[in-house]
Image 1 (cartoon, rainbow, N blue to C red):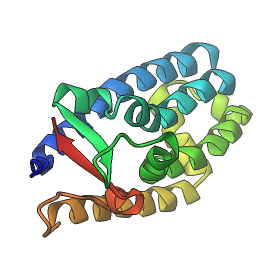
Image 2: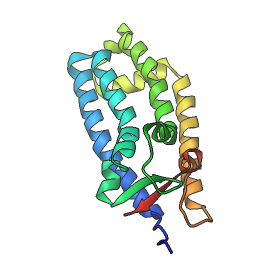
Image 3: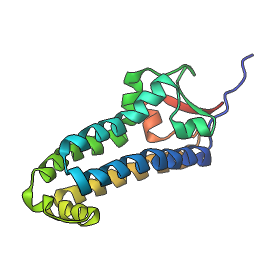
Length: 177
C-alpha cells in the first residue's frame, strides 16, 4: 500500500505566493525603478519582464518549486505525483503570464512616447501610462477577476486536494514534502 500524499494547505500555498511576490517583485520593481529614473529604456525593461514571466514555469519544471515553495517545503507534481515538464508548467502559469505578456507592448509604447518619457517620478509615470492607455485598467480588472476565481477554487476545493484553477487546467498538485 502506498502512502497518501500530503496536499499543501491554503495557507502554505498563500505564504509561498507572498514570498515569491516579495522576492521577484522587489527585484523587478527595483530594477525597473532604476531603469525609469536613470536609463529610461524599454530594452532594460524587456529582459526583466521576460525573466519575471519565466521564473515560475522554469523553477517549477526544473526544481518542482519556486523559491517561495522551497522555503515552505512544497512541490508541484503532475497527476502521477511526478515532476512536471516545462510545457505543463507553462500551462499552469498562464494565469500570471498572459497579463505580463500583454503589458510588454504597452511598455514599449510608453517608453516610445515622448510625453510619458518627460514625466519625472516613477509613480507619476505609472499613472501617466494608465491615463494614456485606459484599456489597461479594464484588462487589469479582468486579470484580477481571474486571480480571484483561481483563489476561490483553491479555497472551495471539496476534494481536500486544495487545487486551484491553474492546477485543474494543468492537471497538477501542490504537495507538502
